[in-house]
Amino acid sequence: MRLRAGETRRLEMPIARPAFLTLLPFLNTPQAEVRLDGKAISTTPIQRLMVRPGAHLLELVRPGGNDSAGHLSTTLTLAAGSETLVTFDLTGNQPLRVREQPAAAP
Image (cartoon, rainbow, N blue to C red; front, side, top):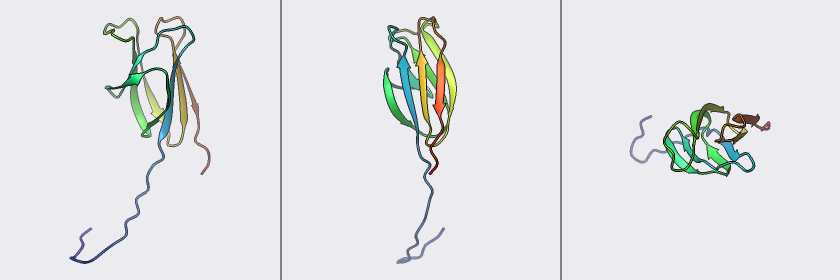
């Protein structure tokens, strides 16, 4: 779009609602450092992290650990407005669990 000097126009651009991600270790299991799309985010537990909708690589790593033991990864596809809960156990005694609650109708 081109504007001339002094000309104004109104633009409307839809903005996607964020997705929300909660990451919790199983009871009495180690916490994890969280990486999302290769970027360090925080240490668990994390409640309702706002994330852009779409596909993301989630990595959960034992703090201070760089080997494959104590390392979990999965690809999540998050819908706009959805709430996703990931529970995990870095010891390997429990499987990684992902539960998504779909977005409420607008």
